[in-house]
Length: 309
Ligand SMILES: [Zn+2]
Image (cartoon, rainbow, N blue to C red):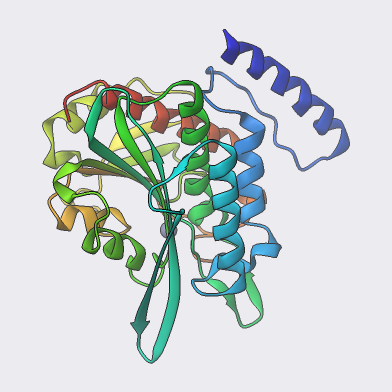
């Protein structure tokens, strides 16, 4: 009931805002979202704004993003996984050494006290190149927005499994944050039963959101196969190396978990014309698709959370 009330209250706010600006896309809340619509949109918009300068690892824009994620986790009652939220690390690519920071939060599970699900999204992007900001709204402010939506949902609906919310750094430079995380485990890897990785979830001309990785786990496969699509999103299994399409198994941070034998699902949209272009901006995401995708991820998680993982 509380959910319904908040959705109604939000639509009123959106209407007011609609009258003030023409850039707001018309939204049709067709499901009872488990999160606040305006919050998710605000977070994605903020992280992909010029002030964050494209969030390239080690730059002031990335530090600002890190701080923003920590403050948002804090406000949503997410606990730090370590003494604080930060897992700093360095790496060298070519002649350049980068200072990077993963942001790691914890939600304690109610049922499976020794089992952990890592829900991840990278927060870094390409930064500024030749004076142009690559804002990375879809890639991957959208995924981080989903992490915040999960945190908000867990405030009133705690998961059965422990959940680590991981905003990884250094993805664009070779999945560095995720590999550092699994190579320097804070929680024993044996106790990590699943990684759900979100990378680019906010626009899809075909309405497809791909789920990659279910081929390695019967319970994951069954859950995704039997999932009833929500709203604008068509959740499809694919890009797993079983057909002629590109294999995305190692295309984002889930690769680090797969490499350690941990079951995973990577969720992402097909590449689009603004992929890794300065035009990957908030104005070019599909707000309805983003919201329905976040709800899809939340629903897949809650279904899996009740099962033996
Ligand atoms: Zn990405």
